[in-house]
Image (cartoon, rainbow, N blue to C red; front, side):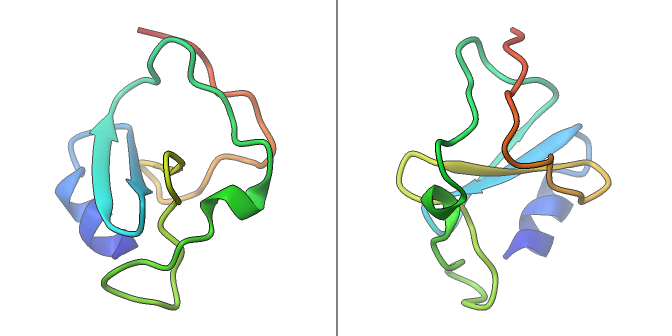
Length: 80
């Protein structure tokens, strides 16, 4: 779920979910990171709560530490 991933990544600036249940944590975005072409690219139901969306195939839905998703569409900063 979004809450479980957020809790797991509590020491990081960002957390994200991909492919329905893969949780990732980080303090910056990797070189070449870009926003998805469409919001529908990140609409896969979460494995732990089908009422939530957890990214998609090769698409990471990202939240900031405060739990607020970055505005869509946006360009994700390319930082190391």
